[in-house]
Length: 556
Image (cartoon, rainbow, N blue to C red; front, side):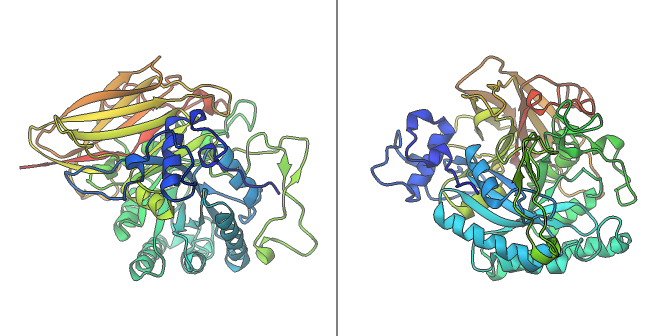
């Protein structure tokens, strides 16, 4: 099919003058990793962007960071319900500026028997041919008693064996545990098996069988079957392995007006409760808000309830690309006598002149996950995800975001996303938010404009007695900065006072085109994301960014 293409900052033929600030910082990482010649012009000193990856912990300074952009949820012909070749997806990801991506193919008999090994050969070749594009191999796990999750490992001699062994032993689909299957009704057994699977992955990392492995829950509220106690159970079973969830699902093009139908919702969140759904979720939980999952979009909701326990739970965004909106490729026809179970791979797609059904954008075209790293490489991306040095945007709303929390008067860098700052009661703290606005039109041909930045603050109270609790009653939007019309790079300084309780802060913002009172009321969130009318959810007209939290531990 098509040859792979380099992102602009990874292409030596592109001048530094043609890159945005984030592109320059990525190029410096590549330079420090030895992926450019010494004579290559960087447009400035390498500096701290390629410093050794370190984290001094509580009360210390985080390193200088560059943000690598990626997508952990991409499908190819090695998934039974997708369409594109590996090369088509990798090429599209480079075109839209991704540094890293995870091919997390659906669990399936054909995938376990054949597809995983076949795809692994393509991935190994792509890594050798283009070390400037980080390509992970993963699995979309059908979680017993729940939805799906991305599972992926660091490159190494056991990465594909780990995924296949895990798939055969712990996948709910292969075990006949999924909704509607005969084994789905034994909820207690199935939930326990999911926990066992996560513990098994943690043991493979601990023993050194693989260098690293991560798990992220996918589209958690789409079916309402990921209960709060399951999310907590997964997190607690494998700390550092089960690190978070999709804050926004893929399928963001599902409700483009006139495209998919009058009942379509962004993210394909078009469901109602079933026998397997957790009964404590309201009907509104099955919708997206500004394209984001209800668990994330609701200030004081489920994500905040998890953070209020004082433990990081990272959010991400991704394409979940199966079939791109307005694309004219169709699935190829099977040769006689073949199917997915017998081959583990779909036939190559075939070009047509007619737009085909689809809800997705290409990897990096609309949804992006930005991971802060201090060096270049697979392990650095995984470490950044685990540490929560993550922010995400839709529609390429921002070129860059840098967040730091420090004591007032402290000359150091302070603590960034996912980190912890220890302070004394009454100390004055400053939150600095450095925004780099979009400098070029997005794939829709529009130059995005950020309208506001919201600061969300919540008290940290520790573990909860009710493992199914989904509210954080002390979390609310505490400040909104109107930044309409501001361009380039600017810094907002927000004073924070340390009271009696530990707390966290996180950020959110949008283009301001569709806002309303948040799900838990105006006193909690006066200007939050809202649902859209079914069939009328143009994603390009309602774009947001979210950041992971910074924790402030108040002591003595």
